[in-house]
Image 1: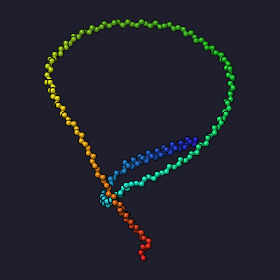
Image 2: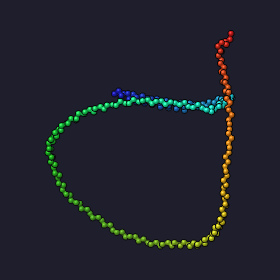
Image 3: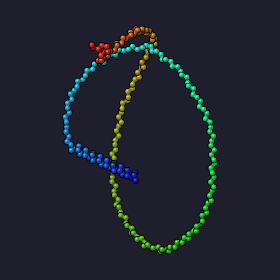
Image 4: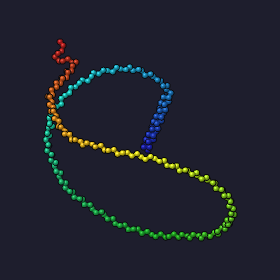
Length: 226
């Protein structure tokens, strides 16, 4: 009973909420249609001048080191010895007692029921067959004579005269051109050029400029005014 009453109250609350939502939406649509639309002019925004940024300071290029120190050799750590798992003894299997035998129940003897005597069906007398009148004979109608129509005479097709075949001029024969003789390539020895050895001058050590000290607005202790 309590569950039915709570379900009914929930259904009533949902129905009230749906009705209130539909009423609010219809009222909002009516207010939007009835309210006059006023167009307000947008104020002109003045263009701000673009700030001029100072150029980026140039960073001097640092010299690349020629030789890097070799990587330190990491010694191999010894492998920890894992203890052997202890052998688990096999538990003896529990002995299950055999199932108890259910004695067979004797089958009850059903008494034989007497067969009911069915009365014989009464004999139906044979009804005499009704004599039908013979079918009326339909007289044969005479066949109408169709007159033979004369065959139309088709004119014969006119004979087309055979046109003489035009004689085509024979194709001109192209004379065979002699093949040009290509001279054999002479082997040119390739000289081995001697490359000059370039010696790089020693690179000067760059002097990096020290960063400027930051000016603090706080007074330094010991330099207070008298």
